[in-house]
Amino acid sequence: MTGSSHQITHISAHDVAAYVRSTGWSCLGNYGREASVFGKDDHSLLVPLASDFADFGRRMQEIVSNLAKFERRSQDSVLRDLTYASSDVFRIRLANPLFDDGEVTLDQGILLFDNAQKIVHAAARSALSPKAYHLARAGTQAEEFLKTVKLGQTEIGSYILTIVFPVTPDLLDGEESESALPFERKVTRSLVTGLNSLETAVRSQVARPSLEPFLKSIELGVSANLCEALSNIGERTEGSTVDTQITWARNRRIPELDTKARFLGGDFSYLRSAAVRLKEQAWDDELVITGPVTRIESEAVLLGGEVFVYALVGESVKRVKVLLDQEQYKQAIESHSAGQNIEVSGKIKKAGRYLTIDSPTSFSVLNGDD
Image (cartoon, rainbow, N blue to C red; front, side, top):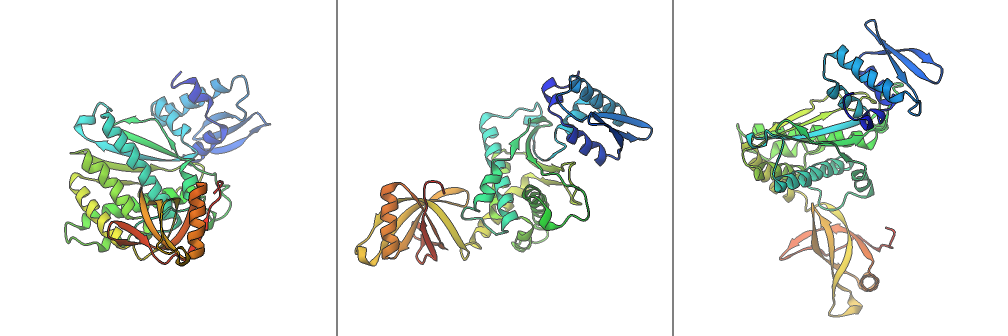
């Protein structure tokens, strides 16, 4: 038997059906509630419908074996495709002779995993609201989405990191509208179009260095956050080429997009420069910051005062100085004493040592559940 029995038994009938339909098989009928039969080119597959059948594992192994023979591929590669049939899979490959054995140093591995998360986070935030630079938190939807993303097994081929996005299935009736797309597919599309646009923008720098190609691609998912995360990977693993690729889930219609992008050694300094310049575009945006009050200052409490808030700005936590009126300042003092977070919206400015919001458009104290 190829693969582990655990892998085999965790493939569902839906996974198999999604995969074979996407490769040209048709359902020929059902045997009651027990199995469905799929056919293609005089070949047939019997797909068990319930995993609690006594011979479920054996039947699934037969499916893997038969598909491998039909497709002239290894059983392990077929098993991998069936395992991910209901997920979009994003792969980041570090191509470097030092990694040909499929191993990287611990520091390099931590760097790759950390910035891979930032790449996915940037795509999720751009899917919600495209921006040159995602300064403050994107809101609950992006943060909750990150909790559903999984790490797959690393793969041989220099060093390949696999990130798995479980995808809500499509019922395939009628046209697929933009509003009907599940958020996870919007994120992976933003990831693909953002990376493709970045590759094009970087290549254009050969003819004429310019920020314009990056600015034009913001609506497609390009951001300072994406540029910075990619440059972190490439610059700190010297001599590496970074290849990215998406494999689409088989349980939804497949987007007609180029799924691959490649970034070479000379590209990463341009990505770093683009990140710096794109950040400069963001300071006119109104942002929402959330965090604890760490310091309070006022020369006259009746006139209000300044508070300092630790909040996520960009991809790191920074101290932001906020100027509040009398009532807001009073609530901030109470939240500081109670250990509660505050939420403030307004335009952030860079003033000396601090980031500053001097004219908040909204202010609130969050309870412990927010």
